[in-house]
Amino acid sequence: MSILIKNGTVVTADHTFRADVYCEGGKIAAIGENLNIPASTEVVDASGQYIMPGGIDPHTHMQFPFMGTVASDDFYTGTAAGLAGGTTTIIDFVIPKPGQRLMEAYEQWRDWAEKSAADYTFHVAITWWDDSVREDMGTLAREHGVNSFKHFMAYKNAIMADDETLVKSFRRCVELGAMPTVHAENGELVYQLQQEMLEKGITGPEAHPLSRPPLVEGEAANRVVQVAKAMNTPVYIVHVSCKDSLEAITRARASGQRVYGEVLAGHLTIDESVYRSKDFDFAAGHVMSPPFRSKEHQEALWQGLQGGNLHTTATDHCCFCKEQKAAGRDDFTQIPNGTAGIEDRLAILWDDGVNKGRLTMNEFVAVTSTNTAKLFNMYPQKGSISVGADADIVVWDPEATRTISAETHHMNVDFNIFEGRTVKGVPSHTVSRGKIVWCNGELRAERGAGRYVHRETFAPFLEAAARQSEVNKPEAVER
Ligand code: URP
Ligand code: ZN
Ligand code: ZN
Ligand code: ZN
Image 1 (cartoon, protein in one colour):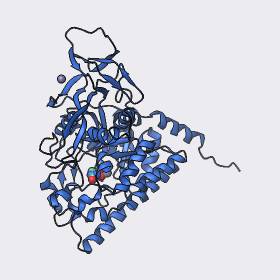
Image 2 (spheres, helix red, strand yellow):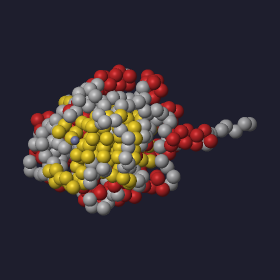
Image 3 (cartoon, protein in one colour):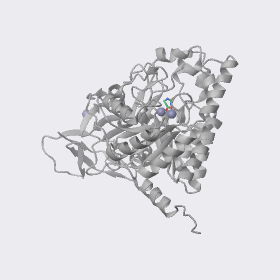
Image 4 (tube, protein in one colour):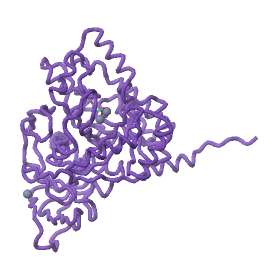
């Protein structure tokens, strides 16, 4: 099975050039002009289009059992929708219940993910602590290709990691050469503010942002940056939604700390007024944490992305249908938190980023694919158009348009936060491991075709952090 993508312009994170791309055996086998290829090769004509690395979504939750229900997109439907939107790899989350062995949860998620249509890999969440957690982190990092661990500073009485867990886990990450990642919101403050809202009789979705103001996120981001500094580890903050946490990252980076930030397509484009809609389904459909913010925060997030203090874009794809959201009709704290977006991220980033001059095409590739591949040590297997890389490619038509709607999207959810938006710039073709899986509106996703991506520990900056710890190690005074 071989394909030739012809007459297009290759766009990578660092340059743009005219070339054809030949894929064979699931890999990119040649890049150039006038390539000598077998006669049986299928040809994709990319005239007037861009040939870019497939998107990598570093933050998804397929079929996640959460808040008394299960996310409606499973690993097949969710990854298939991703392919329709040009995303060819996801990093999903293994989330053990407090007290559950990490290995048991990991095996469970691996089993669920076997039906994936696109490649996948996992961050593993640290939701509790004891010696078995320490041991399983080692097994996962050394034997199972897990090089990142996630910490929820929110969701008190559920999966929240307290400061003791954060410190112990970050220390372990340094030993293993793994990246600690965090959901930064002060879980105690959120919990108390939620109780206050309910006591005041504010029980609808409008109470969601009121109980999670930006300072809640700012406090946690500032705290975790200091914890990372004390442990001498890089840290990656997921779904940065506001100025308060962006400023914590910016300050830390200015002082030489390796702190990385992720931003969601939704946080860049949707504002908090959605929670004040009189339509419960609409308002609840937007309930996710952290909540959508005011325009002022959105502008700051774009600046963070442009200025290099935010590094990756994601979706936090975690779908719940109207019927599932209705569990919180009388109590907003019971509305399952999460929104969909895996199919729309690239188009939203292109339309609001590239078309508006906020991002160059190369920056677009960096923030939708390459930076994630580098941070989570999958580069250049993923996130690059280079000989030997996996043939995960999106052929991008900058002139074509699409009006986003739950009526026509491929995600298994009856709501779309970008409903009605017309975007200019869409994938004409998506290639996953050398196969055409999306062709001008036709989805050819194959159940189970996706493969698990094994990620080695000690990415270069984690290796540097380990060396720095060694150089600066404390010494006793001999007396
Ligand atoms: O509301 C959200 N974001 N749901 C998914 C879990 C998380 O916090 O990432
Ligand atoms: Zn989160
Ligand atoms: Zn999430
Ligand atoms: Zn085609």
